Length: 275
Image: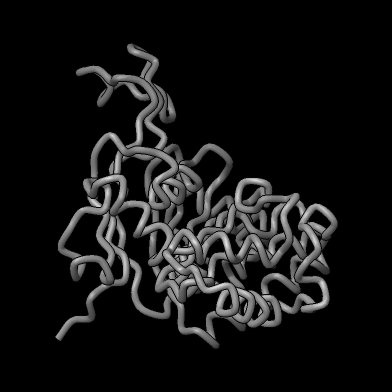
């Protein structure tokens, strides 16, 4: 029997502007030359399986972050379907769920780590309070349980529990990302969304964050959607890879296959720049 995907996305469209009948044949990159609408994600479909890391790579403006943030309900798609195995056995479109159900999905079934920690953390609140916020949003009201869970998670991401009461604004960029990861894991989600988590970090700090992600995958068996413009990051972490350009998927396959035998000229250019 075929495995049920953790996440299924079909025909996702995110468009800025109303669109027009001429859009289809008049897109210059991802912008309609007639009505000026921008097709940030244009007919995106893929599946993510249990314990898998799926990499999404492409240049700035390719639609990677739009895709990721649509899944976390930060953006509303124009059309498309997304289903989670842990929500009605993958039979319901999460983008058509009520706002209350979407909050439940966001707080209980997913974790998100943004490129900019300011978007994922309350920088003036303690590290423990940031984790507690996720737990409270999911319905937990037991202070002792929340403190214990915060301590466990901060230890898992290699932040000293003696710093639990310190605010992320006093942490380095790499430590802020680790607090975000701890917060994202608070409710044991089946799906972790990572958006450019190493961008802007020093190389040595990048390596530590990437090692942490690998250890978390091994420890928790979590499925990860990993957005990056950096093929070196994708090479290290991703089992399969999707390449995006101008809002569309232009190539997909096993990561080794993509890196060793790229088919699309843009992917060939990406791989050549890595070498």
